[in-house]
Length: 511
Ligand code: HXC
Image (cartoon, rainbow, N blue to C red; front, side, top):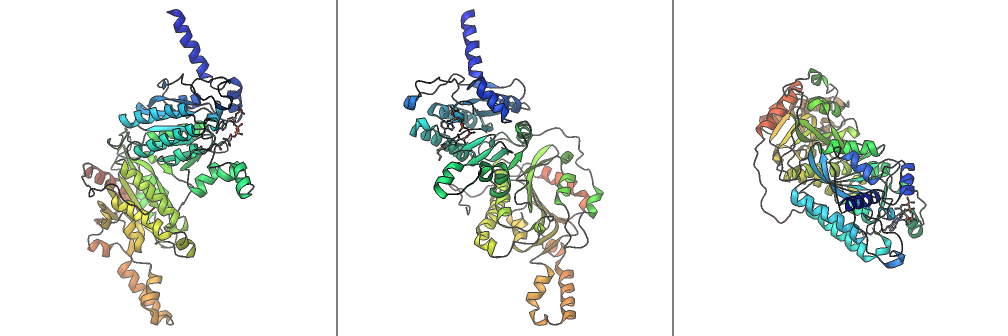
């Protein structure tokens, strides 16, 4: 008996070395942790249960039957806990064939995907891999197909999160693209469908890996990545933080954590947050941080389309999704990027029973050819659609401008907003005074005094919350300092909200 125990121990130790000490050292030299080190950091200490440690590839082509067979075959899979809650995790092992995906490697991942879906727990993939294992040809492609199919079936049922921690290509970017969130590590991770060498051959473009698919490109420009972190350790610790905000599946309620922040805490400084001059910006993030539990806000897409803010926070210990126009950037206008960013976030929250809090200060949609040619109509419609179909509790606070179509889009009463409040500084109108007067009093444009009078008349009548409040489009005009208490009470009242959309196979959001 002792002998077989020793054999097991020895085989485990061999497997733990992956592609060998030299490749582990190379991995460390590049500033990257190994697959097992990453899992250790992500999960609660000692909670990891590994599956399929001894799985090996079965490829015989291109001399693959001659070389060493490495137990685990380039991916470490299993489950563990994050702050006590079950998580399924797989980590690509770059030290084994560059983490590339073989038929057996794919089978390890699909086994895990099936378990996560069946048991209603999030699945996290840590990617550091070169796509399909070239020596396996179509068997590897088929393996990816199996993974992709499960990504889609799991979408909206369990949270799926991808962390990109090395150079990733081919299937190792497509599978993450179908998950809920993608995070990257700065300077060591890249995402591209094809690498710089292929780009050079096909398009004759000279481009570095960083320029083509580095974290700065994807977090800022393409919005493929939801955030980028400085190194592996920070990235994994932030991933733990994110998991704490998410329910385990669409059948679960949001997690509830203890909080020391009183729900009826008032913040008098909010009464002077909005400047008297309506054209002066202020930082909407200040409002978010002052309203949520302990100022704890996990921002999604923090450096892309900064004219809208999206992220998770808690009120009364329970998760909420926050969407807020940011007057500091482009006056908080809605453009294509902001609309797409917020629409995707709203839909995630609605999938997973996370109530939505919307803070509104929006002058409208951004005019111009650049936006129209880029499809603003369809992109703006995405956000409208997302809010309109959402059945989770929706609480809206208009702090200042809510003009035109953007007023309707931003979780208005007309889109089944449950509780819609406005601050006294709110201006709810079809457009700002200048634009309005120039259109409806065009005949007076040569007469400065008349225009000034008309402008004042328009401002007095329409640039306030009261016209909307008189119609019941705003449930109440509230004091800014009591915003947290109002939101907390509304959330408590909406806790058992029941609302269903008509039966359909699935909807047809304007993609
Ligand atoms: C087999 C691979 C591999 C792969 C890397 N390796 N990618 N082996 N199949 N796809 C091996 C290398 O041969 C090397 O082995 C080791 O992993 C480390 O790779 P390096 O190239 O030395 O590392 P680096 O310079 O950091 O470059 C990493 C890389 C590059 C950018 C990922 O390896 C690369 O471009 N790989 C190919 C990417 C690709 O085109 N994949 C196929 C995509 S098609 P040795 O023994 O020499 O150290 C695809 C289809 C999916 O995925 C379907 C989608 C719809």
